[in-house]
Image (cartoon, rainbow, N blue to C red; front, side, top):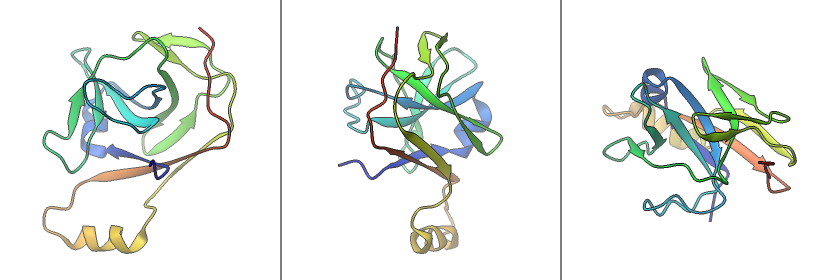
Length: 140
């Protein structure tokens, strides 16, 4: 089950055009990602990727579906909710009209975070917390 964290790669975010928290109503195919929220970036070549820190490669290409929605954007280490927006960005719905979503940035498990930073191959990862009490919905 989903733990409420969206894992974003700082390295991937820094090289992308823009980085978002994406709500996916259905698992991303053929990736089998069951989490409802993932960190997704639009690369300079126009490819959408979802972040997979700790795996190789650290980002995997996917094709957004019509019912996917960008619900928050990461900009310079801060997260901005897209609540109330009703646009389209690079073929993906930008914003949401209903839902009780809260976003925050930081490590969730301080012990694991501290231990990870002591490792020589420490991955440069940002954890974004996404809490929801009402499933987000979009108006197309």
